[in-house]
Length: 456
Figure 1 (tube, rainbow, N blue to C red):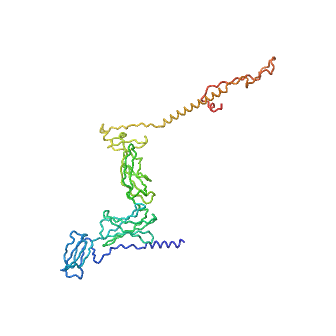
Figure 2 (spheres, rainbow, N blue to C red):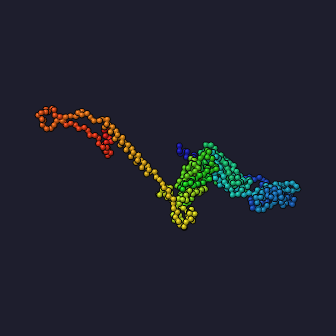
């Protein structure tokens, strides 16, 4: 199946590419309209049926301050070095009646349009515009056509409007619902007047690539009190973007003035950011740009540079030489500092001798770790002491409860090892010596671990 489809696709693409461009010629002129270029000469004739030259007079009704004035007589009227103010109506008269009325246009061919298109948000129409160097003539018309690329469908035609204050043409293109944002579209333009027509180059766009690239507005950088390494950056949405329906994500970049390299922060969804690694006492340059929240389309332009300096406490400044000073960092003795200009210390240096060294105020930093270790050791000692006392008390109570055993109970007589006396029989001699009562418990030895783990 791929064999027959490939030539068909190639033929379709060739047919789409072979579609001739729309004509962009001059606006058609009526029979009684005469066109002249600025600076050129033009001749107006009253007509072959007119009377003799001596009895023909000309009258003009152009827009010039001298409008309505009479001109020289004759069958033909020569106008030299035309100006735009010469445009208007010219009529020839004879015997109190008008023989002919001509319309004179003084125009130049229009400028070639260089169109750019953008879309403010998903729910907005596409706007295409281009600027002009000079104001166009009153009869200038501008048109725009939009069609899908590689198709033979008819293009959508849009009339463009000129805005004199902004000196540009603007064309509004309706976007039908359900259109794929990634499908390429071809935009064609044509501007024409009576002097000629000018067509711009076809522009290929996609709806996802023409979203508004206006950067965020009102970017400000503020220092935070008692935070010598922090800066707060705030900004607002572009005026062309409505955050009630679609959001933007932002990218912030900043750098201290001595360095050319920017630090960038991505995926910022709020309209503010705290910089936590700013250089102490150094001016920072900050810029912000925006993109559609899901990453569709390109990033906007970077905003104008905003400048800010972190908060500085003059009491914590130590001058490191006659022209620079070093600030301690928040991160302890192993942090880094920033060199400050000597202008910050002019007032302090004026009070003493030149080159005096400013002593940095020392602030005692109490770390919690020694207190935690001491407290833990104390609690462990108290717990061990209580365990020893409880264990000793239990053992003492057990001994009191048992008490001493009665005499003879559990005791056995021992038989002497020597020869029995003849007077006493063998059975009367005890076999074992009397048992000695158990010794009372001795003193407590803390080092004897068996005492704590034995069952007795």
